[in-house]
Length: 141
Image (cartoon, rainbow, N blue to C red; front, side, top):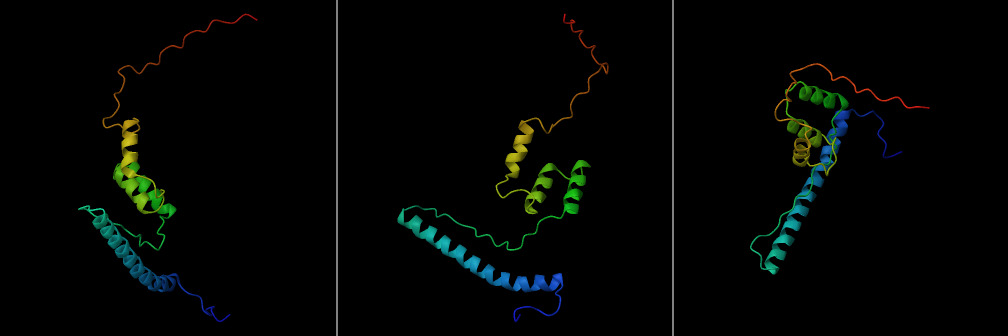
C-alpha cells in the first residue's frame, strides 16, 4: 500500500519517471562499453595486435514499436512509389517490427536476385490473345 500512488498518472508523467531511471542506466551502459573497449585494448596489446576491437552496448531502453497505423502509412507510401523498398525496410527495422537478426541489405539482394523486384518493367507481350487449350484425349471407361 505504501508503494502505490493515490492518483492516476498520465502517460507523459510515466514517461518522465522512466526517463530518469533510463538516465542512470545509460550512464551504466556507457561505463560498461568503456570497460569492454578497455578489455579489448588490453587483449590486443597482449596478442601484439595493432588494431583493437570495439564494442557497442545498446542504450535503447524503451521499446518504440511502430503502431499499426504507422506501418500501414509506410506501406501506402511504398506502394504509391513515394519511398523505396530500402526506406520501408529501414523504417520497419527501426520501428522494431522486423527481428533483430533481419538484415535489410541481405533482403534487398535476395529480392533482386530472386526476381521479386524488377529493375526494369516486364515487357508487355505484343499479342493479347490467349493460346488455345490443347484438347485432351478422352479416356475409355
